[in-house]
Length: 339
Image (cartoon, rainbow, N blue to C red):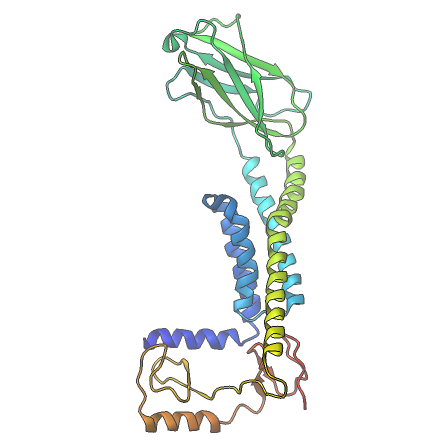
C-alpha cells in the first residue's frame, strides 16, 4: 500500500510540473503510432481507440485548455499520418512476388510477371491447374481477383484462359493485360465439382508505380485517412466534453437556490501511509484503509492548514499546475489571478 501511495504521490507531483504535458503528448503519439503499425487486430475500433488516447492522455496529465488541446491534437494527428505514411512506404518498396497455391494443390504456381512496370506494361497473371485433382470439371472455371491498393473496393474479377502453348505438367491458365498506375494485389480461385470454390491467398503485384510515386501517394493518402478516421472522432470528443461540462455548470447554477452560496471546499489532510488526500473528518483512509487516531488526525489537519506554502509558487485552483507567485495567469489553462 505504501509503495502504491508513493507512486501516486510521485505521479501527482509530476502532473503539476511543466514537463507533464509535453511528456503526455509524446507518449500519446508513440502509443498511437505503435497501434497503427501493429494494432490491426482492433480493426474498426482502431480509429476510436487512437482518438481517445490523443484526447484523454494529455488531459489526464493536465491539458485542460481546449484551444491548446485542438492545436496539439491536430499536430499529433498530422505527425502520425506522416510517420505512418513513411513506414508503409518503406514496407511497400521492399515487397517481393509470392507464388500462390490453393490448400488442395489444384492451383499451383500462381504469379504475375513482370512484378513491377508502368501503366503501359503488358502483365501476365498465370496459374497451373492440376485437373487430375479436380476430376469432374472438364472445363474448369478459373478466375483471378485483382485489388487496387489505393481504392476501397471489393476487387475486379477476370476470367483466365487456357494457354495452349504451355507444355509443362498440368494446364496453364493466364490473363494478359495492362493496369492503370497504382499498386495491386491478386489471388486465384477455381470451381470444384460440387459447385463450391477454393482460393489461394493474396500476393502483391503488379506495381505500376515508381518508388517516388509510391512515396508521394503514401504521404498524401495516409494523413488524409488519419484526419477522416481519427481526426473527426477526436474533434467530436472535444466538442462532446465541452458540451457536457457546460451543461453541468448550467445545471448546477439553476439547481442552486437564489442567494445560496455554493458548497465550501472540504478541509483535507494527507494520509501518512499512502499519501492520498483525506477529508479532515475521516477516521479511515478511503485509499489504503489506514485508521487515524483522533489526536493524530487533528494534528495532521492542523499542520496541513498551518503549513506555509512556498513563497515563490502556488497551485492553480483550476488545473492543479504549479504556478509562480509573480504570474498573473496560469501557463496551462489560462486562468487569471487576482492580486
